[in-house]
Image (cartoon, rainbow, N blue to C red; front, side, top):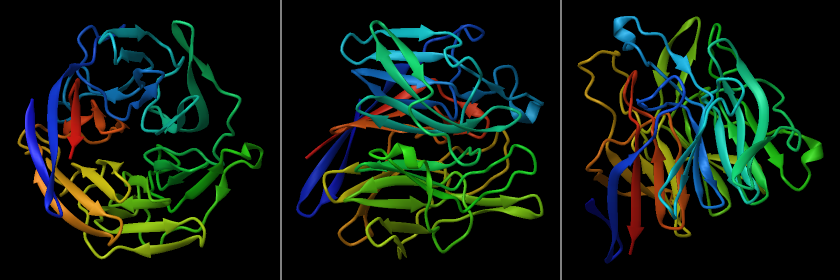
Length: 340
């Protein structure tokens, strides 16, 4: 365990870090090497991790082939025991959006090796196991992977992503689902005034949806990383651009207290995929939503994975598996506990 501190006016916020929890193996992967793009969340005291993708045989620069998975891993936060459900999804899937709801874990979109998905399904507890509810939530209007999203009150927002695994292209998509009126389906909302984005970071705080960083790409243009931040006000349906820069592409974020966002890691610079890659950012940034300005930055003592999710409950956050270098996954789950 390691400890770090944030400034908070005249007080300090203590952050305790642990990096010992390990994903178990599954059918076809007896020793888990980690997963990028897995869905994750907490359902009735169980930390769930499902799907995901990795390079199990060789690294990308060695000609390795990416493999998608369909297993569900369930970690009991009380007993500290893992359960594994092989081929739970029925098809390999990764790089969708995960939303923890009172009734279960909502999985939105994603992709396999061939195509992106528009499916939306709920993972819910049933006796000693879990089941998939694939009928209670409307599908997305289009297939979408590598998007970001968060729940704001009774509404879920989904931003950016790509529609296809062929001629990949980032998008300006911004959709909202009203959980009280699911029969209306996903409604198209006004997009931010900026570049199309995939691998952006989305989070809700103080009733507003925040969108950070991401990258833009298309068959006829070079991939470009962006560090802008935007905030969407649901009542006015207006976007504002933030003044600071946020080099947090493919990172994660969680709301903290009533007026802060914790931005965890990210890709600060696009570098070639190779064994010499230095790894991704270990910076933990704090944004005040009262001023919409960054108020602190510190370094995490452990690698902070990207292309994953930050699952949080009260003052505890779990960053579930993910990538620590391009093409290199980690089976470890980074845990942070924040206290005043």
